[in-house]
Length: 555
Image 1 (tube, rainbow, N blue to C red):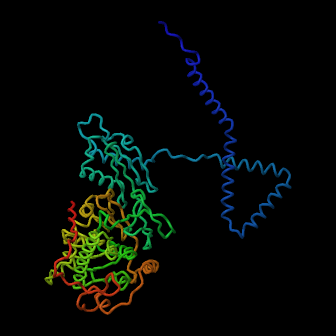
Image 2: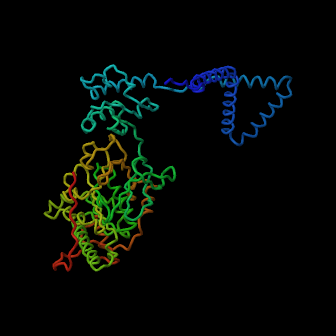
């Protein structure tokens, strides 16, 4: 069967379309050549108008009147001169043609210095991303770097700020050691002193290195927009969390990405451990947590350092005690353990009777322990109980009893923390300069960024449970009684403190440790009247206490 020829419109349509495109392109080029002087003059007039507008905006208001009068006088003189308007028009067109003759130069690639930097980085990566058996290696000495680096960006100093690297599929990107070697090389070759983030795409065999901007240090202590059971630990990168809170910074009000820690019966991370170097801001973080906790609960502070960093909390409504000595700390922690058991028993009896839990068992109780290793050393020397042993009951059963424990310790004494503290503090924070190995030992995972050797106070990393490792900047909450505190920060902290209650003699004597301690006792409890430390229970419990299984230890 013979084939029928295609219709003419289908067989010759593509040729006609191509011919039409060629004619249109030729006409456009011809029009551009003919109208080039007009385009140049128009560009120059636009630049002259922009310059005149900018100069007029920069002229002070008191000088605008004389300037306008002078311009009007010049226009009048030119208009009265023979051939004046014509000469003015010719002069204006000449100036516009001169101004519009230069087109803006668009940079389409790196300069010589940036090319040399990219070549050097490419040559340094050859031993890591190549094997002798590869017939067509992507990385080879003297090879083409443009095939390996798909995207790059530099700052004003010529240093890399972003780099997208392609690597061969046989590279062991699933091994932490192999990744660490490449990240260390990129960090060293791209410039030290900055914080880099490395995003590995195992499926696409791509690595993106980017320079992270420094977190803002202008956010001070203030009332954050949160609900009961939520605590703002600090602020992080905008793309790391999905929640922002309005804050007042040095530049005004803004929405900052916050690291929010949730506590209570439904929390999976009911307790917090903070580890840092001296002067890294661990005490400032505990002070910030205490100010937020006083809005909806009671606070018990145990300060092992004995430096009076929490003296501003003494005698405030909701502050049960601020203990610096060993005797007062042991008595307070023993009361906290009995209080946790009492809450468990009361809540269990209410549930068995079909009633809601009593109000005094639902008010959050916060136990803030700063430097327990010092108190443990004193207790060992005196033959007394280690304060960390008294934290077992609040740590094991605090979630059900609305009791939250926050422990702060320094790196040089972190090994003295008990197993109970390590196993039940699933929310972790590291502050101050630290090696990646130290950060991984505390958080359980290495950060995706390169820690810098020098960081401001309150800068570090946070990890809540099994979540990702986040950069963190703690809100500035210094001691308002310190002479080195600025007036703005002092006022911000003092405005957040509750009103003082009438101080008792026992409370004043046992707050900062300035006087010898009498018989240890917790000065204030949830009720309105002082309650002495309960004696150990001698009779059997009237009802079964809901004992919960301990949280399993994590690696």
